[in-house]
Amino acid sequence: MKIEDLRKLSENDLKSRLVDNLESLQKYRFQKSIQQLEDYKLISEMKKENAKINTVLKELSLSGENING
Image (cartoon, rainbow, N blue to C red; front, side):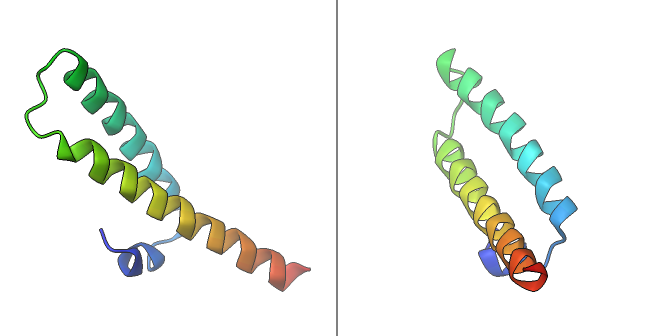
């Protein structure tokens, strides 16, 4: 998912998506360890999406601090 699309989502949606991604990433890593994962690229894509989500969440928290403080 592109970062522009992530910026359109609410904070709660981003957090729930991050939790889902972390669970999926854990499953992918387990499948990789027992050599059942066919597409190893999924792991790196999931990590990149998690980084994007964390970036957007950080932006939201910083913009909230600027308004309040």
